[in-house]
Image 1 (tube, rainbow, N blue to C red):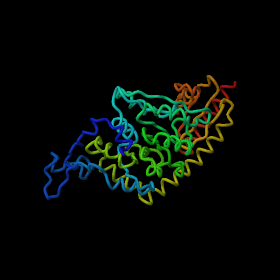
Image 2: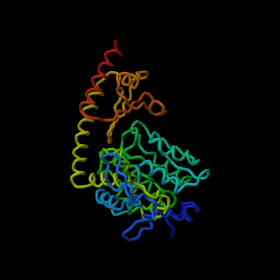
Image 3: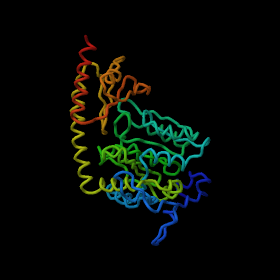
Length: 359
């Protein structure tokens, strides 16, 4: 019986032979003259290292380290950030002008952006109510006409976790015909709620992760795909020849060490405490209608109509994210949780805004 991935992969992808880079072909020897590299390195400034050599075609040590951290046995593929994972999956399993993806709005805009860039249509199934719950039946119905379903949990920009039971319901209903991608970019803030352990049970499940959030490695550009072998067989055909620089791999391996993970968890605990303090402070402000519950490193604030909090903060040198363009998030602003000092400054500015707006 063919897998869902095999059913959905376009014929062109099935026939595609992966690019055979010098590192992918491999070999052993003393003198390496197979990759058109500059054999004698040039040292630019204080940067000394093997920068004249191409990195491994796949950083297997990074993938193994992340697999151990994630406590999964399913295959793990390291990529250049979660955004590359999204793009790879759409290019691997969707044909331009023919196939569709499903997203649950409001959500991360990159899913639709990557689809639009490839002339792939997006079917939108809105989240339900002020709790932004998953419309399971709506997603299941839409999935009948789509190759990929993207679920973001915790969701950006709303900050909430999707119910695990709802995700399983979608997985169960789509297991023979659609791939379900769960984007867990913010999962470290609610790690016990991850669905990565379900990949072995549901081969149609793909999990995306990143080190840009809780690990604080946004500039390193490292993300991961956790998926069944049947999915990886096709994604590996499209992976770029050298997906991650050695310099990034070294930093990632340090972050995924026992000490690195301990530091990340301690930092996450501090951030969660700051987040709760900030929510408590902002919730009492007269122009705030609601601060939505958050399982992330940001909070979504719904203000009274016409409050223009985003513009006021910007005028005071504080850059946040205006969500007014989203129909379901009118008069909402998303604020990342920074240091205690930064959040105190935001609170002070908002308190001044409260005074001026009521005078």
